[in-house]
Image 1: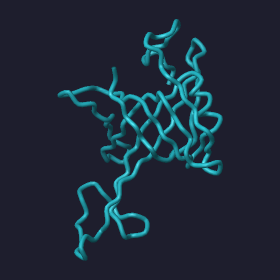
Image 2: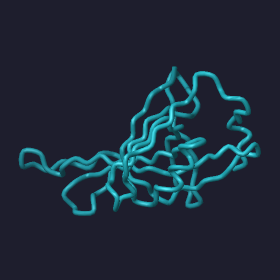
Image 3: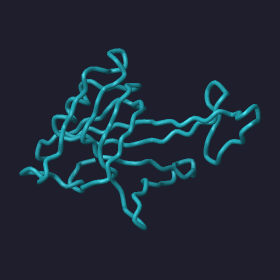
Length: 161
């Protein structure tokens, strides 16, 4: 049993694939999801919610959430071969992180500029390329994690990056 999460968004950079010491492929990439609300409602101005910013067109308030996605084995290789910055994807998987007070929390850190930053991290179980050929699309790739870890399974702490 896991906390199932579905994310639909665009890659913020090209995927990065590496291999564990035992030769298992692992690929990481970042996906941005955005929420938008109109700056006006019933003809009246809507104030900017905390943490939101003005959208590029200036007619909406926008909030972007970043997801760090990890794909393993065959799915990792497929993602590395077909995805690129800007690709639109559907990712289904589980949230990683520390559970505090019964909640899964994002990874939080302070950037070099002193500004607090956060992102959610997830392990992909299913990925579909949905942006069409120009957006890195295709039929999609699916990988289902087995119930039991396979022989030679590498724990997260053993990953060389």
